[in-house]
Amino acid sequence: MNLREISVMTRSRKWELLALFMILCIGVTLRAYRFHDWLHFEIDQTYDFNIVSGAVTNGPGNLPLLGPTAGGGRALRLGPIFYYAQYLSALVFGNTPTGHAMVVLVSSILTIPLVYFFSRRVLSKTVSLSVTALFATSLYTVSYARFSWSPNVLPFLVLGCFYAILRCVDESERHRNRWFLIAALSGAAVTQIHFNAFFTVPAVIVIFLLVKRPRFPLRTWIAALILVAIVYSPMIASDIVTHGENVGFFVNKFAKSTIGGGAADSTAALIDDAHHHITSYFFLLSGLGEINARKVVTLDALMRHRTLSELFVNLSAIVFFTAGAATLLIGLLRERKDKKKDVILILSLWFVVSFSYYFSLARTYRIYPRFFLLVSPLPFLLFGLILDAIRSHRPFRNSPAGLVLIVLFSGMLIGSNISGIISVFDRLQDDSTSSSPLETEDVFPNTSRITLSQQERIAVYISSIASENGYPVYLSSVAEFEPAFWYHLSRLGIRYFSEPHDSPLYREGNYFIVLQTGKTPRANVHFIPLGKREFGSLTVHFFKPNPLFVTQERQSEDSMETTEEMKHILALPTWNRLNR
Image (cartoon, rainbow, N blue to C red):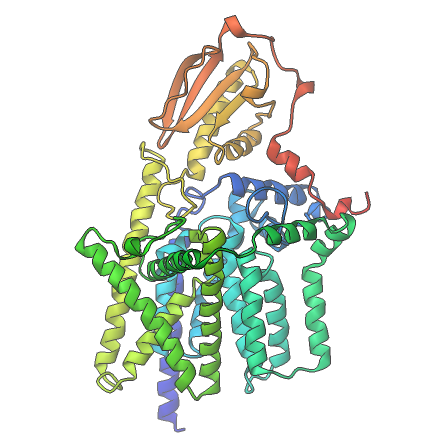
């Protein structure tokens, strides 16, 4: 290699790094813009916050041995790795909702370069940059990066785990043993984030390793098992103390969720599963179409469209999904280079295992938008494989037309995503100032949510009234919002006494109801309205007790209660409670 070739490679490398840096800057901006003000902070977030906040305030011995609940209720729980990550985040960025959510923001930002490094193992430099730019600007990935929730770290952990697996089976890799240990550590962590990952990621890893049959020294296998045991040690300790309570919950839930049904059920579930995958994959890639949580989708609904634009989106989604699956199959059959074939193999397993798993969910449960966080990098990598396959054909091979094609397709998709993000940001801005309806579906689309700044302004208003007369506050609101209001009120010195409907009617009491703007409280002769104030999509209604129905003068400090949320939290096993 002469000096000229070295110079050309150096310049190319500099442009590559500059392009990646610019993509990263755009991705960071979209994820961090008004992160605090527009933070999504509702019942799940306050529950997690209160669990971790106690450990930040009183020491790490108060960290729980179990993690978030699975499938609703407060029984079966995953591992606590996400809580521990939140704990570290709070130590670095502050014990606030924003400080706790920073772990999600940082992991989402780190996923951007990870997508690039993963892509470069199978895709060309130009296509890899295009795939990374798409991931960085995806409406879906940006939306789920902007609040704290355990599933939101799945893209980083899953992709990181698979990347490490690829490195550890690469015969040209100098540190294969180290990468295998990283894969074991990240695999153990990801299985504690969500049950979807618990059932799918290990399946992908085991099948991949059985196909590749890599050889590692016995000490490496032992070290990997030790790392997994360390990650799972809190859960092991909890089940030892509780005599296998959480394992019992798992066995019981799994027994109740056995897959059944006849052929008709299987057909409907397959259509439903296909619908969610086709529409969700294309939505992740383009921000176009819909991503929903409907229980059953019929074949008619899958093909239905009302406008030409909907027809275009539906057809594009079907073509993309089919082309992606075909590209994986062709790659498995034709690819001869081990390094690329390994990537195609793990992508194929990721694709097939997740599709099969969600098929079982479609028969017994329902598929939620958040479930596609598990596979969120996959549609972008499939798109890259499709682009590389097209570019390898004769009309585009070594031709400027191939580059134009990449830029055109990628630019259109980036533009549609950016347009969607701007629309979401506009809606979030409007929600704090206008009376638009609230989104109540499963988080996404996150276009109409109450914001953290909105909650804070409501809490300040309620606190100002309470500080004037010194009376206790009794608050009622939508179940998803009420714990968040009590968090903000507690920071302002407002203490929780009891629920309005569970306590006697006190003459000295400030009674509030927070409802969606436009909705009115049900008539109640026990209360006299004093006024209301709008805070965009939410309205605070203020009441005083009707003297005719007052039963007591004032609730005493001694009779203060604990919220139901805190009762659950205080019952959780922690390291400090192991010896009690």
